[in-house]
Structures are given as C-alpha cells and as structure tokens.
Image (cartoon, rainbow, N blue to C red):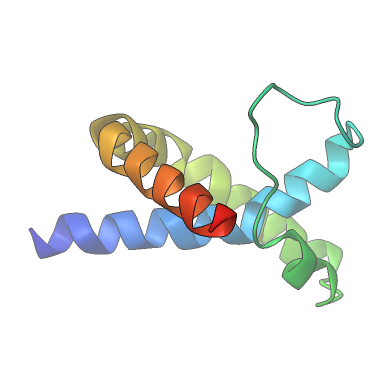
Length: 94
C-alpha cells in the first residue's frame, strides 16, 4: 500500500514539474487546446525559477519515465479525480 502511495506521489510531483516545460515547447496559445483542458497549475511557479536547459531536460526525462505509471494511476482513480475537480470548480463558483 505505501509503495503505491509513494509511486503515485512521485508521479504527481514529476508531472507538476515537467508539464510546463513540455507545454512551453509546444505553445499552442490561449484557447487552442482541447475542450475542457485545464491550465498547468505549476506553470507560473516553474517559469519564475529560471531553470537551466540541463534541468529542463532532466524534468522531461522524468516525465517520460513516469508517464505510463501516471496514466495507469489516472485511469484507476478516474472517478475520484473527477469528483475532486468538480468539488474545486463548485468551491470557486461559491
């Protein structure tokens, strides 16, 4: 059980760190992504860090390594993640 929790935590951390870097490479622009897509929550934080190319490369490698595990975690917890997003959206509206 704890092994699963640590693995999930590592995946979430890796994705939070690496997503803005990959998004910066593609740069679709505002409003051109998938319908319902959410902005990356770590984007602004990482942009202000001024990471070197080597650090960005390491983060991209981490994302590639853990992407399948994260997808599996996301699929297994789809309902819980959806409920959390909906609760967050509801709280923002209140």
